[in-house]
Length: 353
Image (cartoon, rainbow, N blue to C red; front, side, top):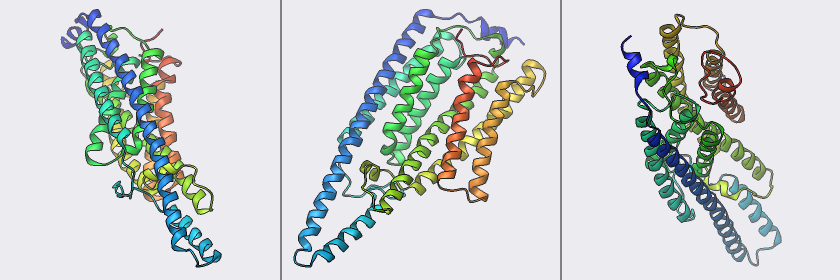
């Protein structure tokens, strides 16, 4: 038991804590700039795609001069049908040579990299100021989670061209940072007695990582639904109102990617559940007590287990799979917001009054 008093006895450095908070605000502002740049990239790319399509139609019309109105109409119909599968990126997330050059996206990546470096400095200074790992309350959990989301996205960019997710990932990160800094502002402070345990490092770090991965799959599933709607609209002969989605892979590719990441996140969440039970036995003398936080952690586990099982064995693919993934993420959000704030229990560690 000698370890626990040592963990709680460390004095906090309020000045360094203030520096960390300022760095968090700066990181949030940098992410907001990155979001604007990512959005600008989508707008410019959409305009470029429309210009390319207009050029192709003009070329097609010139080739069909003298053939007759019926042939022209037939050519246009063929072109419209080809657009359903005429993405500028294939299922391996490799872009076609005709895809527009995306200078704004390159700048957005550079800005986002700057943001994650500032964010890393904020997390490290928070940890040093508190004399512990920086995830003892909602403010720290959200800021650390936002950092992991951004870091995973930037690392993934090295291996796969997932720039199509830039605007959505940066938007989610900005929302997380806003909730942390404005919704759950918590000055640096010692841990509550129940959290003064080495299990905090293991249990919560895994939970933060799993939640970050669930955040990314939420973005993928939302894009899958939008792309599915677009493909159906094009197949029905409607105008392409979301031409920037030609820079996004097919619904099947998005679904498969989300499924793989969800499988990894589910393993981490399973570890979170098991390690939480072990910590509960050490802290309160029981593995399971039906505390509201424990119940919702289990609900999340069941939801994602159902998602993986339904897709793998029951053929729940397409929009049903995407909606299940989104429902699972809604449970994650509810667990780490409403459960921590509204419902009393052993796990009420929001850090706000």
